[in-house]
Image (cartoon, rainbow, N blue to C red; front, side):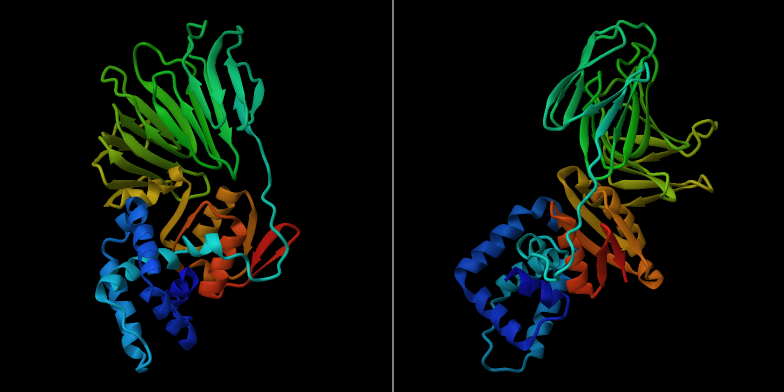
Length: 378
């Protein structure tokens, strides 16, 4: 059923397959499965699809109306509504990719394996194994933090009276969580580096330095504003939840505010007051012009990675390729320059890179081959 729904939205479904889809959706069991699936993922997917369900519903109806065959059984409108919502989900590669294996006999792509590293204030670099637990000590041997699998928590007191910084580096293909000494929670995305104090000063600002992408849930402290330094930009908050994406290879630093309020200053060294974001807004700072553009967005799209989802909306293929390389730690070369500028919508949930590639191949006719563990898009 999932595969047929995907083919319907991709407009590649055959007459026989359409009849089979109608038959399946007449079965009360399949209707309940469809309804449960849509409701279970309402928090992420349907929140992004509010304005598209009616459009999808119309497309489903139009597809059925085109089939002038008396043998087809008409679906009840209520189930068409669910089918319309589900078609968007399936069409974006969500459920279909978890149940359909790669159809092409191509070499297996093996993501590169790299370690998460923690650089201490004395320059010593330690590796963090996400399957183990570990104590983090300062240069005096005092325990200042503890790692438990994919989370590192700071809580001890450093013996040093000066600010002591640690630097956490997350390689491509991995994500990690960090709890700072003030209780602020940080989700770190693949290809991210964060430099932060082992213990914040009792007075003044709480400064951290980001390269990459992170989701912050900041502990409120009116006397000590929390500052994220990302590139040349400065994001200042008191207590709030927001996402910052600041990869050096991207043209902008993007700040997405989920809750609270933040002020974004394109150049931290300038005297500019910056721009204040409201919940549901994105502030994009252009690296070259230092100008900031503010727009209203669906924050779920930009924070879905925290739950392990990959969500692409109105994104060109070259940008999608960069994000796939980070997420899976694989090398992808797009040799089709025209394809690189084409715009796509897609969503994936904790699936292998092979399935992602198969989705683009099956639904968008994008050919690829794997040589020497590198994906070449034709």
